[in-house]
Length: 130
Image (tube, rainbow, N blue to C red; front, side, top):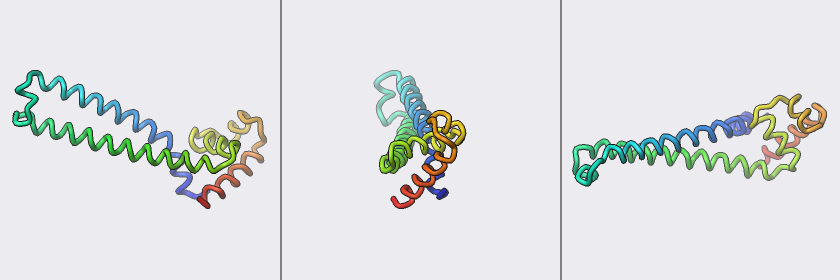
């Protein structure tokens, strides 16, 4: 299988997990920022905490950009899978995204290992063309 395709499929689940973690970090940073500014005077950017606020805002922006990049990458994988037949896409998801063995996928989908392998090869050819 083309290594680039295999890598993108393998990273799909990891990107989802990473996005969830970054969203939690953003929430944590926002809560910390709210706790740090107790009164109106401290909320003004001329305060001593300005550098800390800038760091927090930059960190939030950076995390939001990374989330967006991961979401775009996963949407590209989703779009590529839409080009496949339903059974091909389902097999690719099970084997490469969910990381199930071909034997396990064949049992779940009630197909032989040979059929699963043929469908994977067929799907990979379609993905290479796109």
